[in-house]
Length: 192
Ligand code: ADP
Image (cartoon, rainbow, N blue to C red; front, side, top):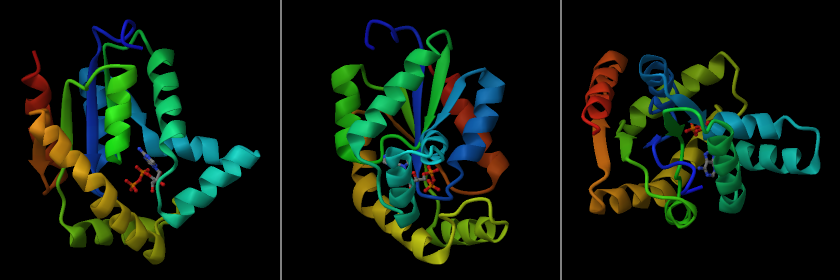
């Protein structure tokens, strides 16, 4: 992986459930012509497979807990290599726990930058429950939302500190979509 992904920009986009990762990544991918890899999207595709593994992943996601890191790393590596020709990657929803961050570096290299969407808990809950009403994601109901937030605060938060120490973290805060997009753009524009 290391030898193959030398010249590509790798950006991790992290933040709580409903913080706007998917929305921002889609807009950024269009503007910068980067490849958007949403871990949740990739996992939902896996969960739709009529296999034992598909069912297991689906169950895990419906509980609002994390899919085992070994599987996540394989899924990410496969998808990075599949799009080797891309000039950059926006990886949405990775890493979600400290061991994923460290494991990624063992097989490859650190990301160029990590963007964190720092959104208030109330805003995240409101958005997820609203999205739940339109019914397109089975995990957007109250019990699951509560568990995803819990997972986020216990397992994902330490990842933020880890990248802070490495001076790779860019906190674009919370707030209206366009303001966040502008901040994300200035982060990307500042990359060498
Ligand atoms: P959200 O951020 O709104 O929870 P995602 O689509 O990013 O939505 O993720 C949905 C679910 O997929 C998570 O609740 C988790 O079960 C699983 N998942 C996504 N990314 C990861 C990851 N990096 N490691 C483990 N599980 C993950």
